[in-house]
Image (tube, rainbow, N blue to C red; front, side, top):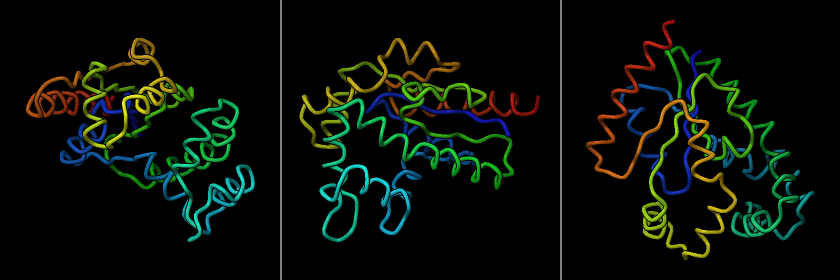
Length: 198
């Protein structure tokens, strides 16, 4: 199956773009959703996280304390790598399973940290959703009620814009209106359908 990895920085509009592709009947595999499912109470990944990071990252109700875990991993490359070693092989296995069940011409796989985790070569095409940093900042402040410092810390961990864009086969600039976005997605959808045929 022809696969398109969709990526972009925080607040770039990845989810909006993925939703527009979904409206056109394209299957979307979202790695954030897979990751959330993998750490539900009773799942092996959560047990491994508890063993590696301690009981402090588990809430009293048995759920993962995402805020505490994020605080730990954002401040340490070693701990972030440790978490990736637990989650990424399981996420890749789940993507493969989901792709095997699909019968569509192509699929979009949403991977926020595609470039950072060296997964570019695993997909036929890389689509980057991009916008300027001030737009990213204002969107995330509105959406998540985070402070500028918190958002900058997240952006520091993510690939720099020029680096991310250098890996792109296709780029959607998301500084305009929803109508602009719909038009760009419709054009790419037609292009991907043709690519999937060859």
